[in-house]
Length: 117
Figure 1 (tube, rainbow, N blue to C red):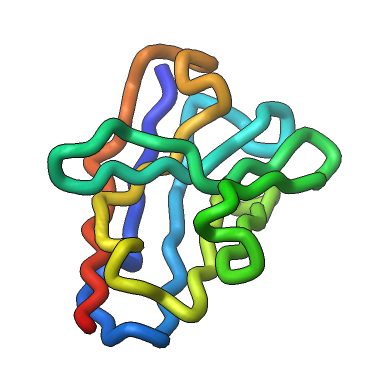
Figure 2 (figure 1 turned 120 degrees about the horizontal axis):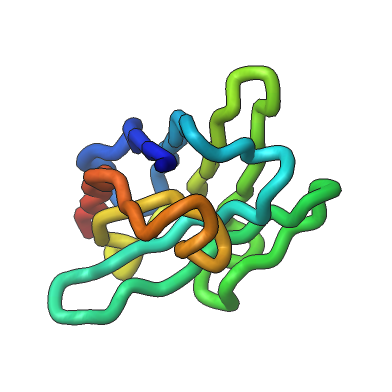
């Protein structure tokens, strides 16, 4: 079974930056499409960034041009560089495979990102 441990969240002012990390085990990030999801209060979890096998990336329109997803394959870690943060980016951020059922139906604890105006 995969395990995913997210870190790097925090409180930041609008316009600031954060870098999230996701240490994966039980699933190889270089052999699976991986993504960053987020869930804001009262909203459904949404996929905001995806990195495909081979390294191509896709982003939700809401974060395009501001967020960058990447992997460190030797470390089996997925990153999300978040720039120009907005209050609407406030959410709990999770990483997982895409689809999330790859490697098992598990989610990590997530990491809270709060952007103040």
